[in-house]
Amino acid sequence: AISANAHENDFLHCLSSFHSKDTSPISKVIYTPNNSSYSSVLESSIQNLRFSEPTTPKPLIIITPKHTSHIQASIHCSRKHGFQIRIRSGGHDFEGLSYVSHVPFIIVDLVNFRSVDIDDKNKVAWIQSGAILGEFYYGIAQKSRTLAFPAGVCHTVGIGGYFSGGGYGLLFRKYGLAVDNIIDALFIDVNGRILDRESMGEDLFWAIRGGGGGSFGIVLAWKVKLVSVPATVTVFRISRTLEQNATKLVHRWQYVAHKLPDDMFSAVTMRRVNSSQDGKRTILASFSSFFLGGIDELIPLMQERFPELGLVKEDCTEMSWIESILYFGQIQNKSLDILLDRSYKTTLNGPSFKTKSDYVKKPIPETALEEIWSKLYEEDAESAVIGFIAYGGKMDEITESATPFPHRAGNLYKIVYTVGWQQEDNIKSRRYITWIRKLYSFMNSFVSKSPRQAYINYRDNDIGVNNKGNTSYVQARIWGRKYFKNNFDKLVQVKTIIDPENFFKHEQSIPPLLS
Ligand code: FDA
Image (cartoon, rainbow, N blue to C red; front, side, top):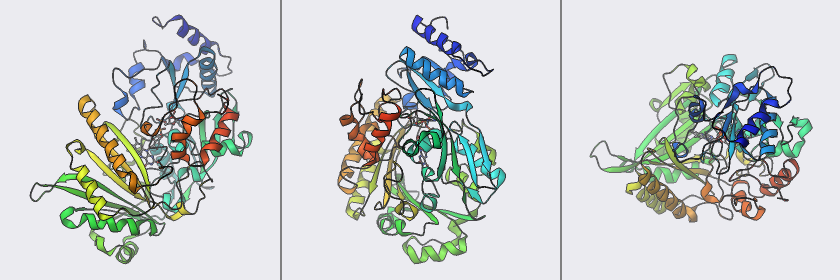
């Protein structure tokens, strides 16, 4: 690179002279800012345009490794020359941590590590981290329509980040999280060693299944168990306004949803709309469900458990599991090939967004729901949505320490708050972020406490970040306990052993005790 300074040139030289038996030269997968593809490679998987501003710090180099030796070289040379590595799989991190850093950094983008190997006979699969959920699902559907994997509906999410933080989806009340179904992994540590489950040991294997991405090393691939689903599943989405009793229905939902059979996924989203009748503003509550069975079984079940909703046959559609992914991903009437489209823009309510999460242990009173509606009426909530996702089922059966993800029994549901906007409007964006922070503080008395729990894969830097320079345990514990509860200390122990000098770090990475 012509304009790269001497330091960067030394770094590039280090990369190209790294000893390797591979035939493919690393120079082919290095992008410096002088390279005409640099911007398109950088932007290719950025999901939150909040972190794609001209002022956003950019990587010195992007590497899209094709061989493990390219990754080993990246780690070796970054350590030697004092650059930080940001690891990117699908680029969906809510705070952009996989592609933005405030110190000189490079991106190791795993886009070329995306093979999917489905063994339908033995109901297992190996998937590389750079694959997206859609590529994995597509691979399963090619082999069988009655095999599935419990992961999310947004098909562009990367396997690497998603598996690193837990990963929930339509099947989580039946089969748990993605991490509950991982049985092996391939991992590169800070010394470039390639480890599998056996050689890494059970503690590190525990930590990478939910302890959050970017803390321990680079996970190359994962082996998972596939799960069985019936050939026919049923989905529905029913929307009700305040005039149609939405408040009472949402209130009631809190009592019924977490007790529904584990064959069901149930969620409700609330947003402000203008009524189609009189044009006046109202709240629209949309109840959506996924059921592992047919309509004829679902209707009597809902009539027994939640008659107030008034579900009828006409509200429901039968389909295959793979079609339900498109249905919930809101990409119906497209061929399954869409699942392979990494550039498909699935946004959380806007190209730029801010999201926060909460866990609820006891139902929120109706009066408080009404106060939430009044917050949604505020001007700065024009593109806000609040979602409640029912817990219970299999999630109640798995102990809090089985994986780093601790939000198991005792949670009625999770809340996700999102506000989105067009990136070009900076003044508005500040107002939207202020709005969502105020809503979050209003919710304090209705949600989990000490710690106020949060979902690591809904990364939220507001709940605390590491101090700059030396990451302190005490500082990290503030956000760490919210994501991991008592599992935080074990994550710190694992980190202290596998990466004692804290090479793999970011704003919310697990600190080693000695640093
Ligand atoms: P990205 O590449 O940004 O990585 C996220 C973090 O993991 C970063 O810190 C990164 O450095 C690290 N990392 C990535 N690859 C790694 C690797 N191979 N080894 C080690 N560290 C690695 N979640 C959910 O549970 N259920 C859902 O349904 C959804 N739906 C959803 C929709 C949309 C539109 C978005 C934007 C996000 C979600 N999520 C979600 C959240 C999602 O699980 C979360 O953002 C994941 O971390 C994204 O993984 P990516 O690989 O795409 O992210």
